[in-house]
Length: 173
Image 1 (cartoon, rainbow, N blue to C red):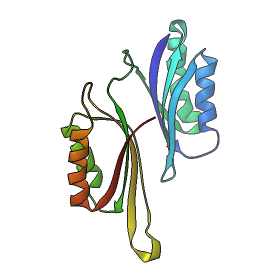
Image 2: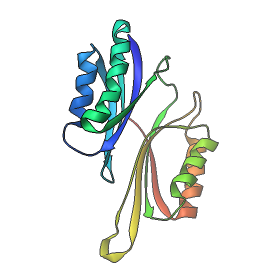
Image 3: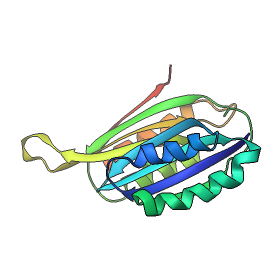
């Protein structure tokens, strides 16, 4: 089996995921993992699939047809081998008044401590009682192997004070 990571984007409409799943299945592939989202009228997804060696050519030829058939542009990249990630996993939650640079500040603090972001979801919403816009984010963060969370907590607490946001960092279950 060959592992592929697919990135897919297109104007949102019914049937996009079904068409991609059909291309995988029709070529003997297995849908292993995915994260799919709708943002600003665009469907976007990243999907890990496994395809039998003998079907790789036909599978890769089927993907460009999805653009014509359903308007879904799909790019396939061979997945990197390797074991499971090491290091402690933490869950990060941030909430504060929306302003430019927040994601940059937080991710720079994480990077300075050698942490990796395994997942990030962010959004804005109106604050209660006309208080402007709030920015909220949730992330799964993985520490470098052998690192503890003290350095991350310190770096993030400093950022939280500067950005005037509520920031929580908890161990994942």
